[in-house]
Image (cartoon, rainbow, N blue to C red; front, side, top):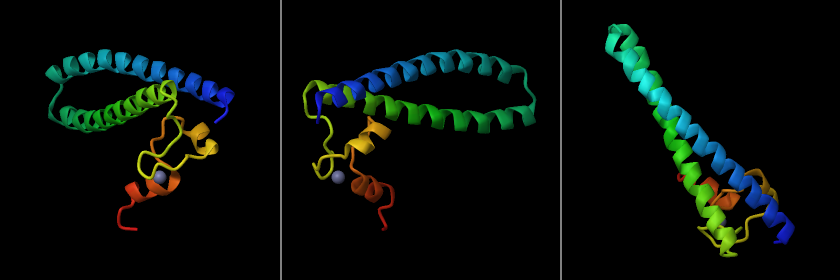
Length: 118
Ligand SMILES: [Zn+2]
């Protein structure tokens, strides 16, 4: 891979990492406010808040996964092992890396992981 591409991708990864870290700091504050509301809310309000909260935790879990992948990708760039599929060890096309720089897998392996029945 060209060094210029690698540097561009690293920049995107660092931006994404900052974005995710900021987001998790903000949502932490929001969670504290939420628990305050819960104390005074009636049963119906609590129920709707619970489903919102489930969605919210799901989002946080996804962000954590992305953050891990972003971190790993930055480490891989530094170790010059970036751009290879963790599953089949094939080179991941640059087009895919530019779309999702923190991806761990090539398209074929990603599809297999997402749809194991196929
Ligand atoms: Zn692969």
